[in-house]
Length: 371
Image 1 (tube, rainbow, N blue to C red):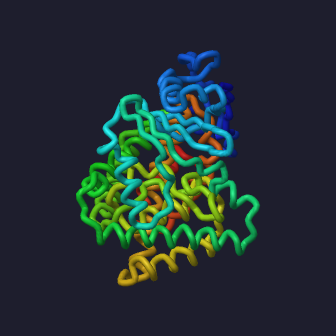
Image 2: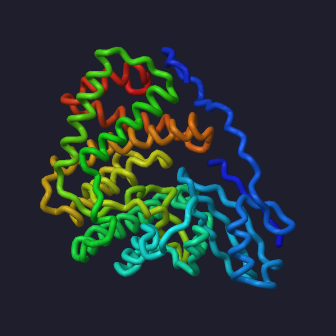
Image 3: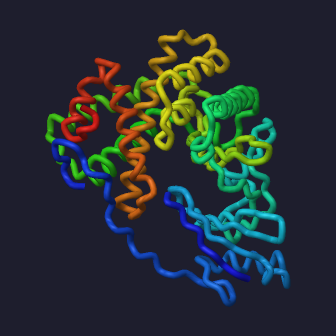
């Protein structure tokens, strides 16, 4: 059996003037893991699983290590003749009946949402064998898309989002995704994650007592307002890297295992204020209004707009926290190119709300992109 590896092209206190391109620290060395018989691979559990499942045919398989997401899971493409699958390796064993990915995947499939087929499960080894959705994410598909195709893709994604919110509201709400929410504590935790890993960790900002107080107050008011809004089921990471263009150009969903209750605007903000894709403001406004009319038609336009933009601020700052964490703690360069666009999203929306001017000014004293 052959094994290949595919990799994906996945501070100091700020100085005034134009910032140099984001440069992360060198990534930490990763020790080699156990091997497949005769070939290197990161984990013996995958070797044992494949040997048990395929028997003598295991020597004919091809296994390609895939670049993963910001989680602790690892992924491998498994090629068995004309059939392609993905092996998802969890860091620990799991009970298939309670693993959030499986539970939420089955709910979503029952609601008619496009999620990958699960082909095999080995909970003791922490392994899922899933349908391979290919490599063409929405992020990549948009690079060659015409304006009309771009609009078609986003309308498809928003149609799916409307289905999620509608069907989940009708369903029995016993699963884990209905028991957790973007409440005040969760939203606040994410803001402090941004503070720790982006402000202080990545950018090495030295905050004054006054700035700390203003930022804390701004975060408190932002999270208190967001947590007071009505809640629906959210995907939780509904952006262009988690939507795969697959069979018949249909967008399939991945990375939904952290789904939880949150505002109707949460996934919309993830999609339209995406760190990974540049969208013009007219396009964003048109798609947002189309979504409002279908998902929350009873919400006044000005209320909806405010909620969408405040949700975008929280979501973008949370993303910056993740990018900072990946750059400094994990030594990953993958997300650093997306920092400037994410900061610009946050700057634009913060500037629209005078009641958050204290937060914007305190942050801008240390993040020049927010000025």
